[in-house]
Image 1 (cartoon, rainbow, N blue to C red):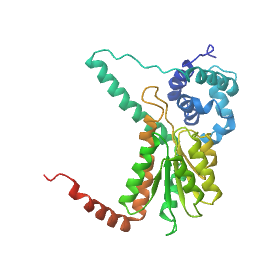
Image 2 (cartoon, one colour):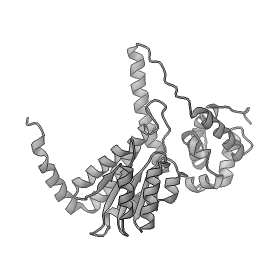
Image 3 (tube, rainbow, N blue to C red):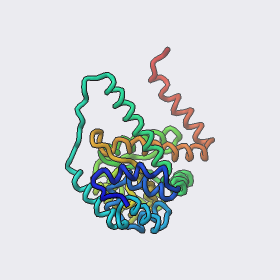
Image 4 (cartoon, rainbow, N blue to C red):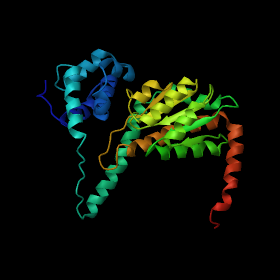
Length: 293
């Protein structure tokens, strides 16, 4: 057994051990490294169900990290998360061309790793189910997309993509309009709610209201046990570590855009005839806005 680990040593060892472990234990170690905020609030069965692993496998990985079991590991990670909540560690960048190059490479690599990690935990069945909600929606169904803060730009991007293939949707970032809209939703309508933390109260209230009216609710978030992921009918979960400088929503935004691109591609390919016509029309409509060669 290792000596008692403290602080970031827990995540460092989990990251180091991961390549040496079997597939299921490796997914557990990576989850510990990538999701300390979620893990500190989840019970062992939640993680087992989310990762599709046994409780005994989680206990085994916890012991390999030097703890008596999962509860012991969870308590120590909770302390680490609590101590870091108020700390923003912004490094001083020396006046060096080499250092700038390293920062650029690190930023890009973080995004690549975030995409790889999320790909390993994405539930393909949920992605397919969500795509087919759009494909098979009733003709009269309305589509609403909602997000606050940084998630708002993701909403606008998906709204733009849907419009290109002839699917009309509405985006709401104002909390009053969100609740008003949800109160008028009907069965068959679709609400896509985007929140990195899954704890944004305005978005949670909107999803609850939409659920009460029988609408299809989808959430896109980074935490499997968040209040939002627990109430949405369809929960898409990514796996991204927070960055103290660029903000917790920064790298997640790249992953969420890719997830929605995958859903968009499925929709477009399964409605190919209509989508091709709409793509042709929308592309021609804005052609005059481009500078001529």
